[in-house]
Length: 191
Image (cartoon, rainbow, N blue to C red; front, top):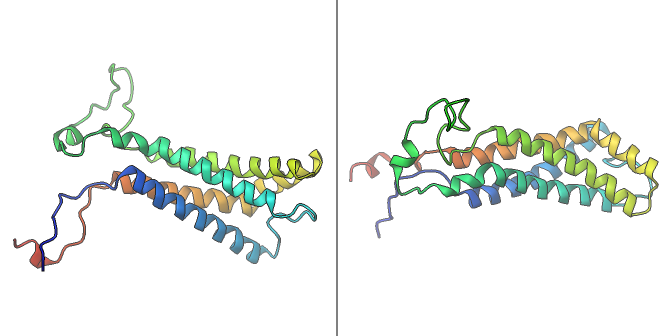
């Protein structure tokens, strides 16, 4: 057998974390909407005649908002050089650069979990706004489109999309923040 390269371990690359988290968000959002519909015995969009375009547009825009929001949170992690652990492990002052206030994170390139809150909010707004806009474009009048969007925003369906965004964005940030190593058997450490 050939010996596999043994890296030092470290965080998942931001683009890889973004891909995994975005795919997870789409899957979890669709699952959440379906299970919420099943549990409440209601359609996601109960207004007759709107078709599938408003729902699909809402999910597509929420996905774009998710990817953009998560990238804004984890994209800075790509700027630090992973080959220089001294830069990544340097202690930071609890004060900002000018010493006047709190710093922005524990380390340069170390994304904050607060990005998950902003990503969740962006997804929720994009989902509701996308459904509203697509309902208008497909021929619904303003009152119907607003009623559909308002129902989604104030029902469990909006909560399902927001929960999917929160869980997946938190996971994506955690993938980039982790400094863990791959699992190893005890005999692998003997070499």
